[in-house]
Image 1 (tube, rainbow, N blue to C red):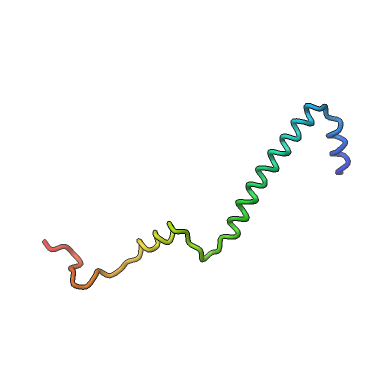
Image 2: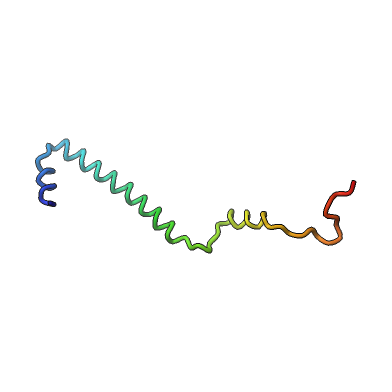
Length: 75
């Protein structure tokens, strides 16, 4: 099977070979970028929180009001 692809490539004229090499190079670059993204996602541990996520989680916690101050404003 591999020999068939090489034979087909060799049958192409030089301009078509050049176009095929560009297409192959572009696919290699896109694949490498996607692979790097997948590796980055896989390395992110489930317990890790970014600064923004940690800050958001602190803001959504319900803390009791400080003692000595009314919970509702007086009228």
